[in-house]
Picture 1 (cartoon, helix red, strand yellow):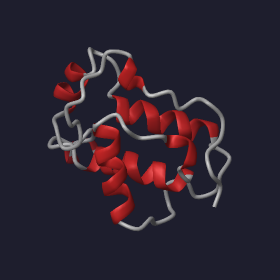
Picture 2 (cartoon, rainbow, N blue to C red):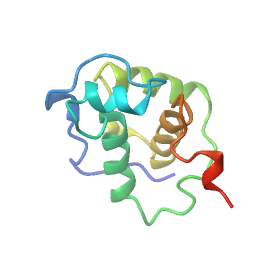
Picture 3 (cartoon, rainbow, N blue to C red):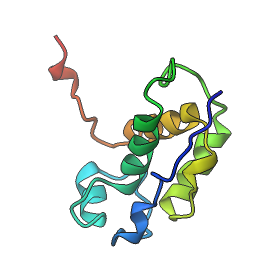
Length: 112
């Protein structure tokens, strides 16, 4: 599996985000806690995924459940270092963030 590389993983936590947990909170609250910016878990994951966009099956590869839970805690407390993370692990973290939103981004009424 391809490991992430480069220095794009500067934590947005430094840029005024609070150290309050964002996983499982409504998106509006996560944005508010991130001073109106993209919530830091989303930004960190998107940076890694963008750099590794050529990797096959980024969102399809299953990752052990324990790892994303551990990463989610680290990201919420601004202790995560994404440099050593496999891009599939990072994608699982992003999926976990989106899956835990109390109100889904796409409501069932949005589907045909």
